[in-house]
Image (cartoon, rainbow, N blue to C red):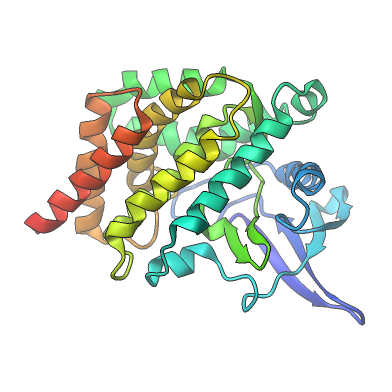
Length: 306
């Protein structure tokens, strides 16, 4: 957990207040600048102007206390996508809507000099994503250090659009008007491929645990990628997907051996992910769709051998 959240019941409405923590509540020793609260506030303002109703409404910000207030979205009308996926509610249309939403946000920010200046948050992104995910995992796997260095260099030197940085099913609500994206503390003007690799990674991982719907997750991942591709205008889509293809196995490995491992995998499942990710990193490709498919195949084959 990276922040404290409060539900506040006012006379006329219910709101949510969020305050950034200096030390994140994870197993490792992970500290991050509380200024990320301001980064998220800025992202909410940007995104609310592009996709109103698909991000919480920003209400008020107190920079001195590293907190802000936003609209409160109740679970009955806005269930968390992660919870739905884990219980077997896997639908391609939900994934496609998420891909479309990410793509619209990237397209709206691509080439915008003012947004590039406002979200020149490289240090924040490094603290929250590059170091705990990629660099920390590279230290656990020194034989893969060269490949990780290449991925880190490519990611940190690509500046094309405003990246959310934490497009995870736990940060996506499925509301009456479509997906609602939360938790943009990592927002950064950088490589849009990171967001696609990050969210696809979660769909791949959940093929190990989704109740009764494991086979539906790969088509959902493809639907997400296809919907996203239709929004890519800032470069040839193959360029974005080539970088995402390199990132995906690195992020798979990071979610078992980085500072923020996913909580729903047991030791044996972590071993399956580790073996699959290492194999994919040892034979890198630029074809995102084939990496997605191969990753799921490797995990499925390993599961059958258990």
